[in-house]
Length: 476
Image (tube, rainbow, N blue to C red; front, top):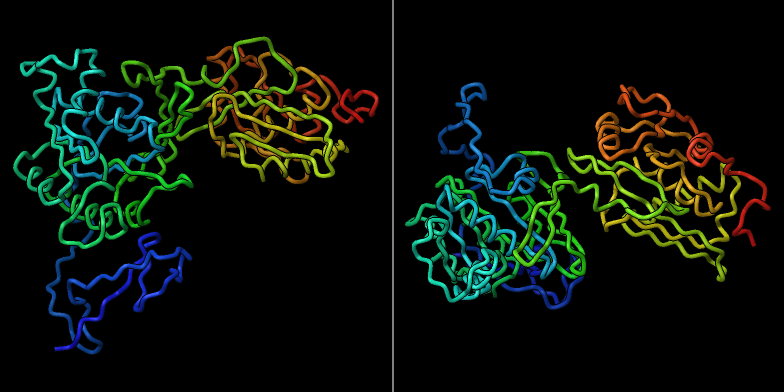
């Protein structure tokens, strides 16, 4: 009988090697290779030998269509991010920083769904008493109250367990409609020798839960940890196994939280849901654009844009500060927008308009802590920077929408009509858009088309941005 050759798998990146190294050849991490014995032989037939597996494929047209049945989570914001609710037999991974509110969100969701479905909440990190305390606090009840007769808790079952086999047995016996696993990194498969949270444990536990979800038609919500770099902990296979990946973001010192879909097989990606954390848990924000707009007097260096997150347009305020630099190399800092994007826009402004921005520090921030990644914010960034540099105010009620090319030209962006309708709803009456945008403007909004960044700045600031140096208050 041939000797079984062990493999060594990295607990950081999941790659495998056939001999031990102190440092992983793939990711470079030290002391992460652990020995694993193969548990099954390869099922691939040898070359030249016909396969004995019977044919089980069938034409695509012969596959019976399935009605898409979704389970409402009781939260319109969470349903929006999921694409309309939970799909039966799906796996959804929810990740976020510690203390951001992942367990609170899913416990509230489980409580709402338990009123019309059977829900199993598996707590692998906290005891049953700790979860009960939080559940009572979210409902506004005293923790000592025993409300076994409450109809709101009849469909919600709690299991405090870390053993994967016991969790799978509970899923088989209870047969719930929805299951919440908090968290996947805390589950442990006793058949594996590695510790809980390792690459092998996370991969095998997620695969076992996925198989049970597909067979029993259970929608499973998984809580996932993140690393110090902000990435989801565990192997990349975890993100491929699940049907949807949701990221729960926000500043723990602020009250609002952002739920964003990074992957969704049943809906739009990068969809955004907004919540606010209070003493009774998370509440939905029905008008999220108000979070990203200042309510005070307008100041120089601010511009309003409309960013599209998934299918939702959001009016966001950009704030720029340009000041003389006291160092040989000026500072460039951006919060909410990529630094490389800011550097590119500053270079275009200096090249096309002759503004000496290379001698000035530049700071840019998106109000409310939102991350804006689409190029439709380019014109707003340029207008805010020049307004701060010239100490000018943008015309009140003006939106700046468009992509900035390296030659100073403006390019149209997608979903322009939805952006203008959102701006009109919030009281904006002027919009600066690129030339060539095929739109039907709202009746109460004036749309100004510009082909170059110079034309856009003149229309927004009512002033020539490339004026003489004596018109520049910050000029050294």
